Length: 205
Image (tube, rainbow, N blue to C red; front, side):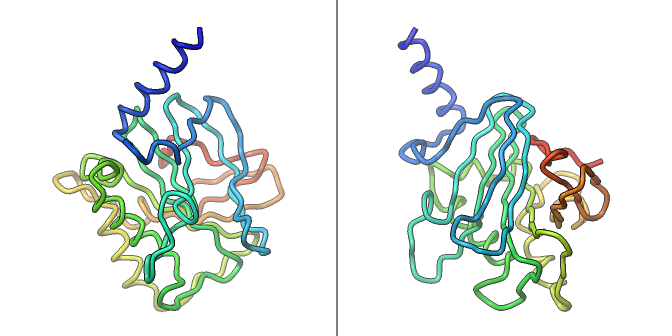
C-alpha cells in the first residue's frame, strides 16, 4: 500500500513537471476547504477556498518557492490545477491596495509569473497553454486606488493566452472581498465568505 501511494504522488508531480521544486507544492484533497492567510501580516487578509477537483496544488512563492532575492517581488499563494491546466496567483492585501512601486499586487504577481517562465521546471505553470488568473484579496471594504489602469493592463497582458480569444481584464484580474456573511458573487468583484468560499479550479460566471 505504501509503495502505491508513493508511486501515485510521483506521477502527479511529473504531470506538472515540478522537478526539484515539487517539495514546495502541497497536493490538496478534493472537497477540502481551507483559509489562506498571510502569517506575516496583521491586517487579517485571507481567502477561503474550496477544492473541487483532483490534482490541485498549493504553494507559497513568498518565503518558500522563491528565494529572497533583491528586487524579486512575489505573490502570497499559487494554486495550480493540473487537470484544468490552470494557475491562479493570489495576493492578500489590507483594505487599501497600494499603487506604490515595489509593493503593489500587480507588480508582485507579474514578477512571480516572470520567475516561473524563467525556470525550466516551472515554466509550464505560466506558459501560453495554461489558463492564468490573478486574485487580489482584501477583507471587508476594498479600496482600489486611482491610476492603476496601466498596471492592471500590464498584468492582464501577462495572463492572456496567445493564440486564443482575448478575454477582458475583468475575466482574468479578479478583486476579491471577503465578508463574514454567507454570500457569494462572481460578477465584476468576487464576494465570498468562509461559508461560501471561492472554488478551484476557478470558473467565471
